[in-house]
Length: 404
Image 1: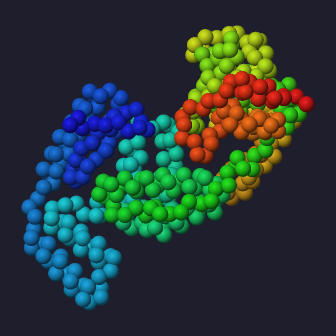
Image 2: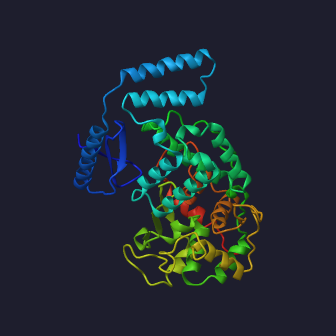
Image 3: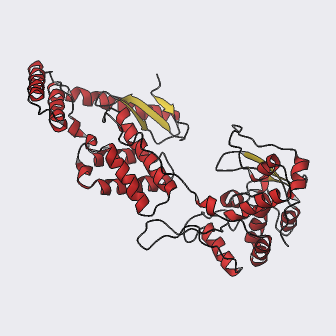
């Protein structure tokens, strides 16, 4: 047995071995090299075996008998409550030479779990994990330094409802609950916890910002294109005629373009679907004004290396373009002064995607052709590759008008 395995969501090898408490442990080795991962896993296995040997003590039959007898006395006297039962279990574990339940607190477990993810996830995910753990432990207050079993399902529900009351969107709240369900789920799997307090906690009903967003009008798209310069002009035209999302468009490479067949082939990040998109005449015209790149050269070099979020991100840059073009973003959700949520707009770069879909629908384009262009997956679809007749797609895309 190699002692290592690959998780589908990380490139690093995962070590699997019996830990110091005798439970199976899955732990990221932090490396993609199989031989190095095997070396690390073997070392961890040896260390765990040594720790188990060090902790091994002789079982005390008398101690076990005493704990069982005391449990019977408490039960007959009507005094066997949760607190007393916990003390009895700890006495039994001590008599059996095992660690007590008090060995793992909520704070210790959250910190251990978070540390195990370093090197296994991207920085953005790591920051999210840190924030969720910080908020959760602050909410627990005194329970943060108590054993895992001190947290109840009622605590989980109260935390969920408090986040919603603080103004966070239902989607953010549900993602937080899902993450904590996973954190405590791993504690259950490793034998530190008997139940998951987040198991069965219902999700809040989501009304996403997408449901409140509006498409740009044809006149608004026209003034945005006029106000945009250089790469921004090209990316606005591209998004308005294909529905590509901001980061998918910004990361487009010249190898994704075939100027002879006027076709774009690219994978979208959200679903992993491969799209084959006709190049709209307006985008083809813009391309003729640009230096032609090859291979992995970005089509939009001024935008390709920038992130989407933050004050210096592409989303805010597009918002400033809207302001220069005198195009109002409107308000989809208004954050209050005391709210932790943020104000969101009805019109953003994503509205160019809505514009493309609306244009296709208003021109009578078949739904399957429209989905193939915008990359919207059908609810019942399980395919990973979106295809449609290219001649139909070209005819459909030419129906998108960028000016009144």
